[in-house]
Length: 220
Image 1 (cartoon, rainbow, N blue to C red):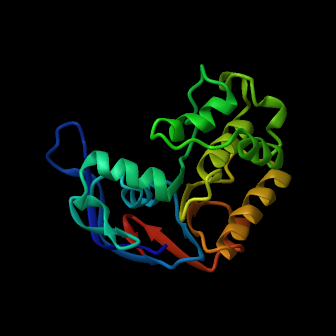
Image 2: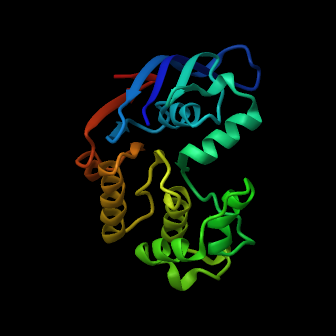
């Protein structure tokens, strides 16, 4: 499934709301199906903002976002949530787990909420692949930063969505786990999955089929 943005713009305003403190300039981007695309750039350059817009989480002030053949911002909030849950796996930056739930519950809950769960054996298999199987029934609040990152990745890819949007997927990971994650994302593209990641990781760039750079809200 392809992903594209056309003339997307967004502004963040300060407390006085008179002047924007950050502006994502008119941005167009095509992310081809079955390829791994990377966006690099300094913190604050707009990478995560663009990723949130492409994920259907942050509505742009102007422009269109098309996932497959669907203009996702023409959908209602509920329709867009269902469409995203079915087609897009999002790996957010930072700790996104529900701390009072177990590792297994954190993975299964998003899909159960939409009436389409994942078999326990499928979840166990991918937890084993990412070294989390022994923590399956442990509360997420006890996980280290690297374990939290791997949990977010497992939750995003367990149903093998058509598109993966990854915000710093190798953050907090040691070398072995970093290579495992990048190899898995690259492997998924070989079966047709579209992957877009924003990253500071120079090694991650080497796995990408195409690389863009963002500076001050402008995609180069």
